[in-house]
Image 1 (cartoon, rainbow, N blue to C red):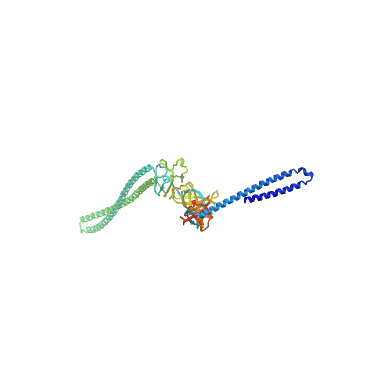
Image 2 (image 1 turned 60 degrees about the vertical axis):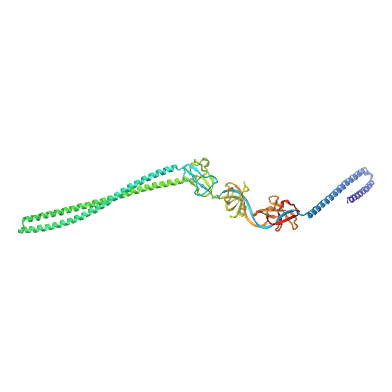
Length: 515
C-alpha cells in the first residue's frame, strides 16, 4: 500500500514537471523587450518544485503514520475485547436497585444558640454578706434547691431581742388583765352593795310602817284615856302613861324615817361605785387591748425576722441549668462589684442565671425571601459549627415578626437538652420545608467527585458495569442520597465492591439488596 502511494506521488510530480517545462518553452517566445527578465523563471520553477516535493513528503509521512496508529488501536481494542470475553469475571459485587423514595427539602440557615427561658436568681434581702456559694456554672439544679447562703447573725440577734420584748409585753398583758379582774370584782361588790342597800331601804320602810301603825294606836289610846280621865273613869297616872307611849311611838316613826333616808343614801353610793367600777373596767380593758396589740406587733416582728432569716438561704426559683454564677463569697447583696454593674435586675443584684429546664433554642437567620418556606413545627437538623460530631434534632417554634436591617428574620428552633450545646455557640440548621418523591440510593454506592456529583457503576444484564456520573441532592434517612440526574428507576448499581472495579469490567453479582 505504501508503494502504491509513492508511485502515485511520483506520477503527479512528473506531470507537474512537464507542465512547467511547457511553460518554459512558451517563455522563449516572449519579445526581446522582456527577455532580460527571463532568468527569473527557472529560479521560480525550481523553488516551486522544491516546495511541492516537501509538502508531498509530509503528507505521505503523516498518512503512513496515521494508518499505522489506527491499525495499532484497532488491534488493541480487538485484543481487549477478546480478553474481556474470554477471561472469566473474578470480582464479586452486590447491587441495589434505584428506587423511588420520599425526599425532604431543607433550607440551610445559621445562628447562635440561646436559652429559651433565662431566669435570674435575685437575693430577697439586701445588705447581707454572702457566706456560701453551693453551685457552679453548668450544674443542674432543682426548684427549691439551696444555691447560696447569706450571713444571718444580725437577724438572729434581732430575733432574740424581739422574743425578749414579746415576753415583756406578755407580762404587761397579764398585769393589766389582773387589774381588770380586780375592777370587775369591785363592780360586783358595788352591785352587791346596791342590792343590800335597796334591801335595807325596804326593811326600813317596813319598820316605818310598823312604827306608824303603833303611833296611830298610841294616839287613839291617848285620846280615849283623855276622855276617860276627864270623866274620872281612869286615873291621871294612866293618862300620863298613854301620853308617854304616844310620844315614844312618834319618835320611833321619826327614827325609822331617818333610817330610810340613810338606806337610800347607801343605795345611791353603791350605784355610784358601780359606775366607777364600770369606768375602771373599761380603762383596764383598753389597757389589756393595748398590751395585746403590742404583743401582736412583737410577734409580727419575730415572724418578719424569721422570714428574713429564711431569705438568707438563696433557693432556685425553677429547675434548670446554671448558666451564670455571679455570686462570690464575701460580696454584699445589693452592692454589686464594679465588674457586675450590668447585672442589676429591678434594682437588685443578680446572683445567678438559670436556663429553665435546660431548654435551649437556635436563633437562626433566614433571608426575607425564603421565610415563607418555613413553617411552625417543621423539624430541623442542627449541627455545631465548631464540632461536626454534635448533631441534634430540633423544631421550629417561633418566627420573629420583625425583619432586621439585613433583611433577615429570626427563626427560633427549640432544642433538646444537650451537654455539648451552650448559649452563645454558633450552629448550622437544615430546616425541613417540603417533602417530594425522588430517586435514592445508598450513600456507600457513590464515588464522590465534587460537592454535588459522584460516579456510580450500573450493572447491565450481561453483568458488564458502566461508569455513570450522577448529580446528588439531599441526604435521606437510612444512609441514602437523593439522585437528581444520571439514573432511572430500576437501574442496578454496585453497592459493595465499587471501589475495585472500572468501566467495562465484567463482575459476578453475588446478591441483591441494600447490604
